[in-house]
Image (cartoon, rainbow, N blue to C red; front, top):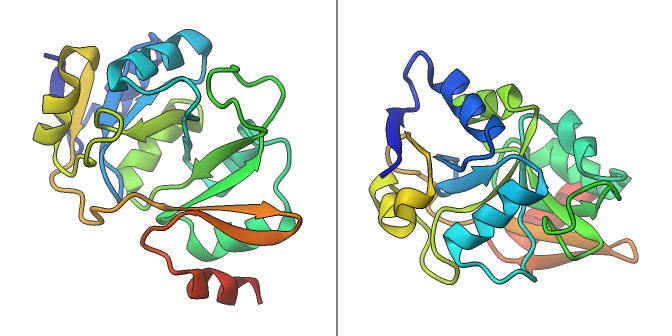
Length: 204
């Protein structure tokens, strides 16, 4: 089993950043559910797919330390999407943005990449120390319920993960709302904590 460390431990940020720098996986809490993360390179992302038993055609979202880190993985940040980010980040909103051409192909087979800034300062500190962005999917086996505790994540992922960062129970408990813009129109890709009415109101 991987090492377990408290989110509030003095050295957690450095230990977590060093772990992903070696190409290993970490589990970390967010404001929604626990996520399992890897640095954004092909080999580490491959291992994330194996650990989750995730079908290769399913894209891996990216967690960001800050709104300005979006362009680390996105080719552009269209104005409507930026308005939603300014309204709801940090928070439970994932935006599908046009992806950069230099990203590992296995991160997303789509023309877009999903990005989000979590509303948990310690987790954002880990992301910042790891370069501003990590490939992070929910810390479960694919198609299983999300993990809201570190114990649930450990039952799902076991020895596949090198470091488990324990932040207690994730209070959100529901994966983020995922939205895309098609022809300039808002589309809800996955319903979540944010309602369509709230999203549309932020665009007015």
